[in-house]
Length: 254
Image 1 (tube, helix red, strand yellow):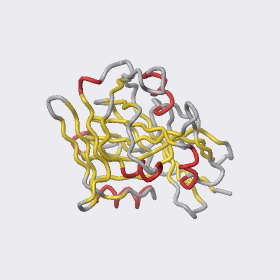
Image 2: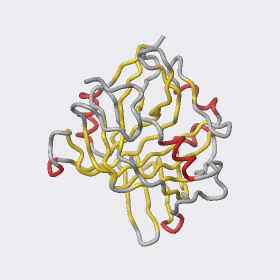
Image 3: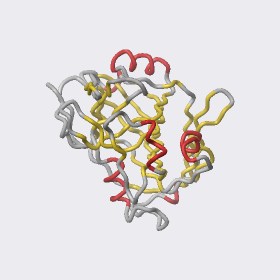
Image 4: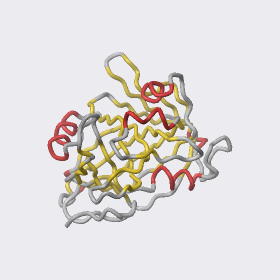
């Protein structure tokens, strides 16, 4: 059964798909000028903006029990991934632009899953060490390649609440959640290709919890804006069942 394009972000997926539990997720978001993302947009796509900026989010997930939907939890696998992503209006196969996540830089810490995912879905991940430490007062996320630090951030536990920090460009945690998480498809495109790959991704309803983030290093966003960056805010969730499509929807680009 094909997945409808108007799927909501909390809808179950029909047919065979992957399922896992988000043990901990941080969506750490940075405003960037729209023009810095033009090279990453597939033909016909448009950046989605909020407060006159595009938004790049570092999406870190500690996933547990990932397995095909017909298997029990005990057959699942745990892993970490860290994806830089933005929200964009992407061209779907029926020619309509729809709001979706556009993957900019995908990373995962298990080579087996990177290889298997590429073979199964055609969506590629870089395999890199991604560390996640929960300490008494904070959480620490770090991604490296060789001796180079690509991402390094600390989230103070005391900063997490239902209210977003007053300095945020979003008026509320719910407004940030609606803009950054309220979509149900993710797309990946490589420059020069004439196909955009779209995969459905949904999850059960979650509680919106906002936090602050101390960014020590974000090499990807720094490469866009040419300077050190600070996050506008973070959103976190925990113990949320998550659903991923297996077969990508392929949209031919003009």
